[in-house]
Amino acid sequence: MRLSFVAKRPMMVILVCLLLCAAGVRADELHLKNGRMVEAEEVWEVGDAIWYRQGKVIASFARTDVARITKSKPAPAASLSSVGNSGESANGDEMVTRTVSRILLKGGRQIDADAVWENSGLVGYRLGKMQTVIDRRDVERIVHDVTVTEPKSVAANASLRYTTGHSGLDRLIAYSGDKYDIDPTLIFLIMREESRFNHRAVSRVGARGLMQLMPGTAAKLGVRNIHDPVENVDAGTRYLRTLLEMFNGDVNLALAAYNAGEGAVMKYGRRIPPYRETMNYVWRINTAYRRAMAANRNEK
Image (cartoon, rainbow, N blue to C red):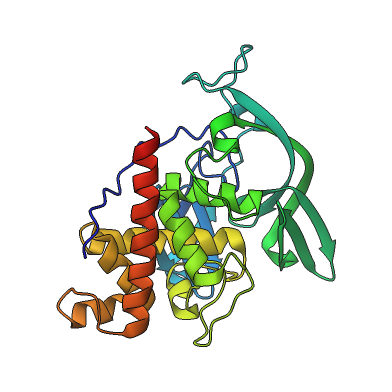
């Protein structure tokens, strides 16, 4: 049974950085040895590669091909929001404020957490009820008591119909859905199926984290810490977007490829592989998604 699905959704205007500072950041510059210069919104290093992001496109160069990296200065916090005296955003959405601890990572990325602490070379942080740690060597600095202003609809996760039980994870799912133009309900259902929202989950075949990424897939996606919720969900959602495009928006084939690998789907003529686990996986998420969409239509 095929599921008709339109992946395109109206993109929300992200006025502030929620968990990853993608909007409002000046470009870094990668200067290559061949004289070429590449501007990027994010640059980070993994092993012998230099990774960079331009919008939704993520790619890498060999470290030996890069002459130097010119880092931009982050935009002042006040410039991240377009809030007027009326307390509304430019599109009329009511604005709310919250106080966070901001972790500035080497490479230009950042994480806005509800709480941050340091212990034995590690930096721990909490998003709602979920917490994890990252290597202190990956952190440039930590800024406490940062006030951020965001649209109330974003803060309340209006685009996510269900809750994981962790407010920070709900925000992360909503943010990733908007960032990669995927219905956050689909991300929610995949995450529930893959890890039951446990960011420390490890499968019997070695898949890890909330989106259950295989280490090899994570490395290809430029992931530095596979158990870090921000990196794991971002990479898993980005991988799902790639699969949707590979199979022309067919969610069933994208789900089958997420479970069994795109090679298996191609091997069987761009059809769901005849593996019991994969067929059940696709059926469960397909059914849950159709029910969610039907409930949404009935409410309108």
